[in-house]
Length: 72
Image (tube, rainbow, N blue to C red; front, side, top):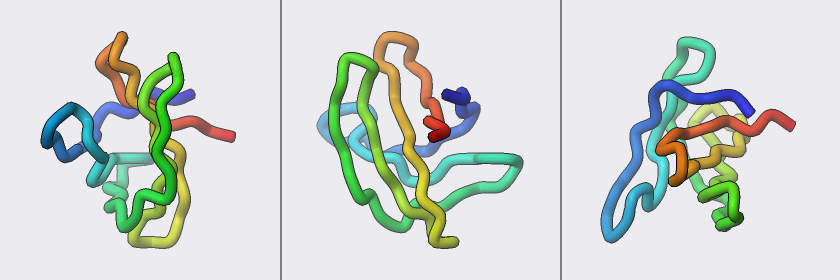
């Protein structure tokens, strides 16, 4: 997994409720859709599709208070 330095997320009842955008390879990626969301001991997982049509797997670790990009 690669640590993401900048993630913007919506925080309603909890943080993070859902990511809105993130920076990857010096480019802001706007999230158009969350295609899947689940919890594991590792953290909150989000399968997302960007406005450019690319798919990414983001993970938020509550323990580390960090966002990560899972490269598969």
